[in-house]
Image (cartoon, rainbow, N blue to C red; front, side, top):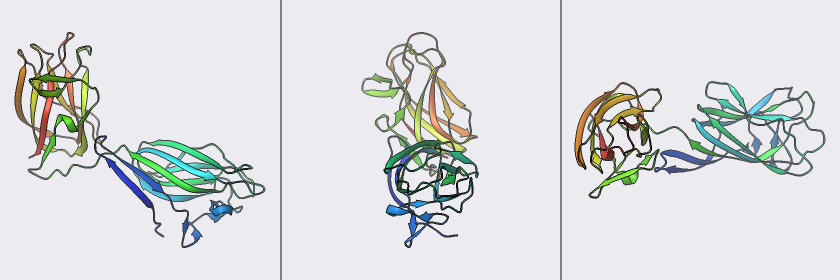
Length: 290
């Protein structure tokens, strides 16, 4: 199998916890169109007239789940042209149609496709969609912006400590409580019992034994009690860790050990009390691999 070079400029957004890449997919190798395609005018490629209906060729691309924004230039039609459709080939081999039947027009034009892939992909494909014995549309300048929905795996070696200061993490709801300069993520007073706030960990931690050390912050007397859960990862479900309440405003330094039966990517704070009052908050915390 031939290997094709992919020109990639990759940028990692640590605050968002996702990878973003701008990918330029090569359409020629050593001066020749990549396998399955034919050269067209103006530096483009197409499927030639010999392709039967639903025959196609693939531009190699291997990436994970996430958002794909595809841009290309569809070139001017040169004589009779067969309609064609673009697909993503998923990691399991299934084909996902991502465009209507397309042809070139009297002038070249830009075309954009946005696709949210629930799993990984292994190719971007063009298929002839009618029986016309003619070449398909020709295209060039194929580019993909890929924003991964997958998180990197945590390097969970024994003894490693992962720090999560409030200033460097992201939560689902912007609600911060404060006691004498100590701040934490909480659940707003307007949110009812069993509502929750999710703190993104930015990594996928594997099943295993861990220590969680954190500050629990009460900004007022008798805040709503809350419980901590783990969630996310490749497997669904939540794991209850511990519940906390407070009678007085203040800060509790808490350490506890837990065993995660499944991988996890989030620490969830869930309001357990009724009433229009803010919950206790999660201040700076660390996760240590045991």
